[in-house]
Length: 113
Length: 401
Image (tube, rainbow over all chains, first blue to last red; front, side, top):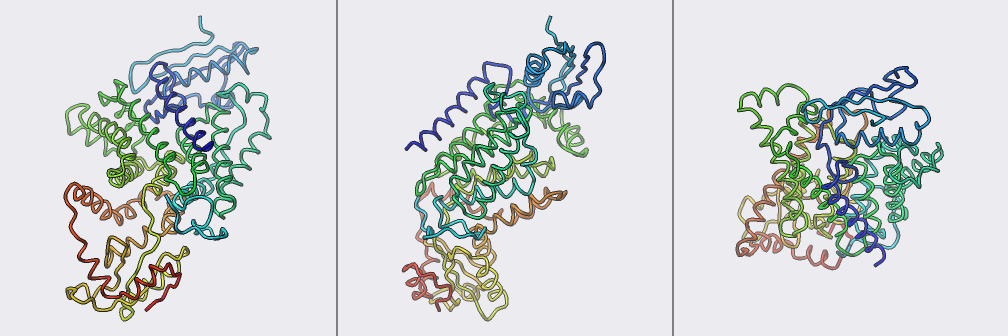
């Protein structure tokens, strides 16, 4: 009975996450596989120096230029989380240019002004 | 669901799936996932804590965390394959995969979530009962996938599918085919096909009378994606297809009549006898059946289940489908590392089992009408009543003529 309840609770959490994803922009853990093709290019500068693609990969665990197969909001959320936690003291400036599903180019910048 | 093949002590034999504290199909599913996970070296990708979903994991940052998860995942997988404390092993392995996802947003892919979720739920499934948790998990996954597409304007217009196809489908054939049609027609049609299939599978996999047809539809759907994209999407293809074994009824006993005079009959007797590690098959000589038509007398193999009969290649297909070793062998072939032809190899496998899909469709239609009496089965059973009496006593004897 306890095991069944644990399993049902686990499934209900997922249903809740699916419902929640209808109201927010991010698509983490809500079963939206490969629903978005976000082609992006990320430029990062720290104290005026531009990071190389290898440094960007090492810093964010994402390539500097790639197709991220999920919502752009996910990518932005990860970059923002990094800069608000691990990279808080480094004062990095980020420019993310991206297109979702071959749509128009959009730009996100950090720090947000 | 009762597991009639449960015996006293669990075997170390990796092909055996009965005799543990997990229902046979559930353990087979867990083994298939574990096998693919090991063969693909998935455990090597488990990262340390990095941009976690849950801030409470942040203090665990350090290489030891990743190594603990790797050890748990590999240890759980090996324990599943060798039938050691399988429920605990399944929960440990699944939890390791899910914890790795929670500990790192860049690591969070649906393929990993479904892998971990299925394993955890397999461990939580009560032995002797229907694996409803696993079936519900698959339905929740398709519900999320279908809904997210349905509520997205790009998917409804076909723009999202076109972008996906441009990135994922190698070669020019998709673009060339699309160019033959008005703009966005092909992408919209295929996008809507994906939406409808995913939403259909939610009730389709939950309602018993739709289940078998829906499983075959899902297998065709995912294998088409595999062939078109040459991608398994990480563990996704393996985990989802492995979960489908819990939707089928596994026979406790099959009586197999073979013709020992013919080479094919002897070969079938030898080959299937070797891989029948669960002792499901009861063999008998294929004698002339009273009242049977001439062609039925000449069958080199006939397979009899309580409510059905198959002969020839259809019989071989049933023997393969009733044996966990078949699925483990297919898993090995498709998950084998650095196999650039896995997408092509999936095609003949699917084609071999395609008649079973057509049979399922026929059965689904027939169930809408009044069922006819199984005359062919009565004829076959009349041919060797002594065999059935042995089988019905639950004898493990393989040779009973």
